[in-house]
Amino acid sequence: MQIMVRAAIGAQVTSVPIEVDPKWVIKSVIVEFCQKIDIPVTGDIEMKDDSGLILNKSATIGEAGIHNGDTVFISHSEPEGDAEQQDVFVRRGMERSQMYSIVLVCVGFVLVTASICGIIALAMRFTEEICSDEGYGAVFDAGSSHTNLTIYSWLGDSRTEGTGVVRQEGTCRSPGGGISSYDDNPQDAGPSLISCLDYTKQVVPEQYYNFTSLHLGATAGMRLLEKTEPSTSTLIMESVRQTMATYPFNFTANQATIISGSDEGSYGWVSANFLSGTLNPGSTLSSAIVSALSADPLPTVGALDMGGASTQITFIPEDPSSLPPQYSENLRLYGVNYTLYTHSYLCYGVNEAIRRFKANLVKDSGYAKMTVNPCAPKGFRETVDGKYLWEAPCSKGPQALAGWGSEVLPSPNAVNITSFNLSGTSDLDSCRTAVAKLFNFTAPCPIEPCSFNGVYHPKPYGKFLAFSVFANLISDLDLPSDASVQHIENTTKSFCAKTYDEVKKMPGNLQLLVLYCFDLTYFSTLLLRGYKFDADIWKITFTNEVKGKELGWSLGFMINATNMIPTEASCTDFTKVGFYVGLAILIVTFVIGLIVLVIAVYRCTRPKRESGYEELNPDFARKNTYGSL
Image 1 (tube, helix red, strand yellow):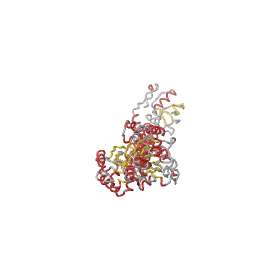
Image 2 (spheres, rainbow, N blue to C red):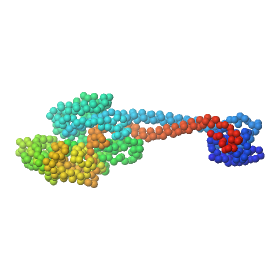
Image 3 (tube, rainbow, N blue to C red):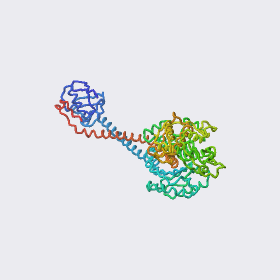
């Protein structure tokens, strides 16, 4: 900085601009001035500001309140001058400096203290309202052919960290068939779950028993039994509830239920998107802010689930507003409204489909003792029990009419025939024709467009995850998870041409291998002709896992049952985005307060550091060394 120094020494009046540093002391300026006008430095030379106040020679330029462009005055002191005035700090500059330091200390202290208190309060509220879901959950998937248990944990805050902290701790398969298979001895349905309940006690730490939510959801097998034999269905569910209630977990009777087909589809969709991270993108501060500022939710994935007795399709169509109410499901997750198309086709699960397929073959053959099965490998023969074909809920009665549109019944002239023989021919064309008879593609369509059997079905939109039996088949055939239409077509042609001798040489379960030609043909017909997928919109991934976690409806069921995901992204009115934004503001406030305190401390201690200044003699000053600190 530059100041103007005016001198009145003797008869000479001189004005000299001098480049100075705010840290120079007043005496250094006097020495510099004397050098420039070539006069000796004497002890009676003093400096005054523009108000005539004598400046302390030990004070710095900054402390004296001198700024760039100011004018100061140098002269000899008067003999009778006020000595006290010469020995004191420049009051105006010093008082101003002290005032600034005090203000800075106060401001810094308030900012640091307030930010620390704010962070503690924010963390306590966040922990209380959002982090209280620590614990475990176990869900029985009581399907038509078997019952699986999956144990989940959400140690820490599953809503804050998204799916990353939701862990799958273990799975267990109950012995025997599904609980619907205990129709002859309902009292044994509950005990069939004991081995998996004991396994849950081994996996879950004992201190979490009381906080572990235990659930059972029965699907299509029990839905069929509930409609055909309601009393038997009730006895089975009572047996299940009694057994589950004897364990030390968080369980009430309404936590073991028969779920609807639409719920099964919706839960599968929630699971697929929860694990894919498309429901709650706010697992980091940046993504939380992005999701908060974005008006549109992230693109979701559709769910394709194939079970033993039913199959479900659930997705968000391109125009959700066009969905008829009876085919839509409204969900609100993380503050976002979702309108889903979902439909469950009862009796179109793979086990019921193969049963109906074989029943149709026998019926179309005139109930002959030997019937051709074009989907089975040539050389393969099997004997099928007549009761298996005709007595199932999907063969006769209201469910057969609701699912297939017709019943398939034994011939009055063949009531004494209790079994039928089926012989494979490896005939793909005939196989496709026979499989297509399972679908009524020409049924009246009350609300267009339709899939089959007159069921409304919008055009598939976006990416899909196909799991359960869909994924099992693709995996067993060593096909890639993103197998294309052409890839599946080529595999179908190749596999369906194999003879039984060739199939027997293949690795895998022979009982399943002989069904794979039917499975491939059935799945292709359902997806391409039924659901209206084609090569252009085929974005299907066949998998039973997402990020190492099992994909199925059970996770979505648990999420819905335990409110792990609330209708808003918080427990009450406290949002995760609010936490992140508040935390960021408090951290910035803390840093600013800390900086202000450091500056204040530096200003307060600087005079003490400079108090060791020694007065220069004229000879030392001539060497351009002024001793300023």
